[in-house]
Length: 103
Image (cartoon, rainbow, N blue to C red):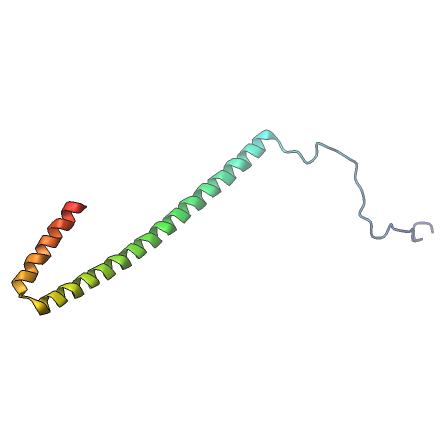
């Protein structure tokens, strides 16, 4: 009958185990392999982030190039209204040469 009798605090306390200080330690080889796996994952993440940023920069550059070409086209159209077509063509060629020399 004593086993059925309630004892204070025994119904919700977790059962305790013996104190063993080395039980939660892992071997050096295991730790090393876990660190290597974590480093591999980090390297892959960095690589993926770099690819994503590269793609983003490529898209941005394409947009900038389009805008620049559009502005240049509009500028040459304005010039064509004011002066002769042959003169505009010569200016285009000259600017193209200068751009190639600068880069």
